[in-house]
Structures are given as structure tokens and as C-alpha cells.
Image (cartoon, rainbow, N blue to C red; front, side, top):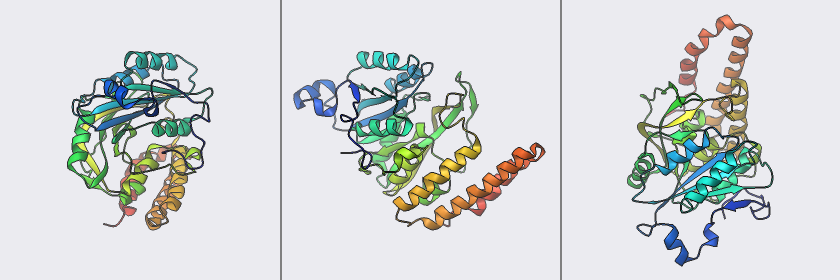
Length: 325
């Protein structure tokens, strides 16, 4: 069973699921809940906490997905929000019981454990991630990625470009991905995370469990992408099909750069052991680059007049620490 190594099961933790689990459904009943047209299924993992103002848009963007060629399930981990988030997601689950299941518990478990318990209940052949404050902008996003992975068997995961939006949904930027290769490798990802969580799709089942250090980290999507990239290439689809929301309630995006870099370094050190130090040289170079960035950030914070130099230095640093071909 998928889960975090050495972690107790959901039932032992007192986790409540709104909607049926796969184990609860008999083969006869299952045929009435999920389409019989194909055995292929896409799972969407959604975690949410205090997203009362954004969660409906996130869920609706999943429900609008074209999925005639595959079955769709949305598993939502609601982590004891103090606002109206739980009421909203339960209402959607009651209206769409054939698609949506809600996982909640008696107490807040934190972001990493919330992700883990959702992943444990995803049953699809493919898995997409969508946080409760982000949303998808294209109704063919999932279909496009499924078709890509069905066609490109060498890829263990794929991703696409995104819009960065503000709290109201206004576009802040669309990252320039013109130089992004259509195929990248694990080594490239270890240098820096270029995959937005709301854009990724994995071949689900390649990773059987999460490492025992999972719950101690502050990042979920990056280590999950690295673990999958052990099994194949990373494919890129050159289309913006999601919106990544940057707002005061965001868990990671609003953290100060120094804290983000330290969190990334902590994950890299943990991944070094998980990967049996096979990529130690690449990780060592990436850690060195991050230390340099931390020093530079501290200098620019202390001397604001030097901040314009930061943008000029970043491309130079990336070139220095780019992994060898």
C-alpha cells in the first residue's frame, strides 16, 4: 500500500473520508460509479487549508476537464480549515460523488501529511496535482497530458507552462519557457525546480512509498517529481494550461527567498541519500549554487542599491552550475 515509510494508516489516525474509498466499493457497484468505457483513470490530488475564497474555482476547473477517454477522480485533503473550506468541498462531494472524495480528520496534520494521505487514496494510472488555491485554465489540460504520456513511453512525468496570477486572478506573468527543452532529465531537475505543481502529471505507481523524511520537509511536489524522474524522462508541453496563484495565504510562494532556498537545500540533502548518492556531484553543485545565492541575497538585502545586480547575476550563476550533458 502506498504511504509514508513507517507511518500509521489513515484508519489508525482517525481520518474521515467523505465519499467511497476503492476498498468500500464492490465490483458491481463500481461499474455504476465509474465509467466502463476504459480502465484508464486519472487521479487529481488536491490539498487545501483555509482556501475558502479560492477552493470552488480550483474544484470547478477539475470538473470542467474533458475526460471522455478516461475516468476521473478528485481526492481532496481538507486539513481542518478554520474558515468555510470544509463546508464547500463537502458540498461539491455530495453533488459529484462519482468523482470527488474528501479526506479530513479530527485535527490539523500539516501540509506534508495532508499530501501523503491524499496520495495514499489516489487510484489512477496517472496523477495530477492541484493545490486548493490554484486552478486550471484549459479544459483539455488532463487530456493533453494523458495523450502525451500514452504516446511518449520514455517519459515518467510531464509538465507545461503556467500563468502566475494574483489573489484576484489577474495575470502577474507568464514565465518565459522558450528555451525549455522538450525532454529534460533528473540531473536537470536537481539543479533547480522548473516544474510548477499545478502543471505536472505522473505515471502513478512508479513510486511505491514516500521516504520516512517526507513529513519533515516543506516541499512536496519537488521531491515527488525527482522520485518519478528516476524512472524516465521529463516531458515538456509548450502551452500554459494552469494558474499558479501568488497571494498572502500561499504556503510556500510567500516565504522569503532565504527560507525557500534553505528548504530546497534540506530536500536536496535528503534526496542525496534516497538516490544512493548516484547524483551526489550534481546535488553538491546545486547546494553550492544555493549557498552563493543566499550570500548574495543577504548582501542585497543589506544594501538595497545593489539589488538590480541580482537579476544580472542569476543567468551567470545558472550557466556555471548547469549539469554536464
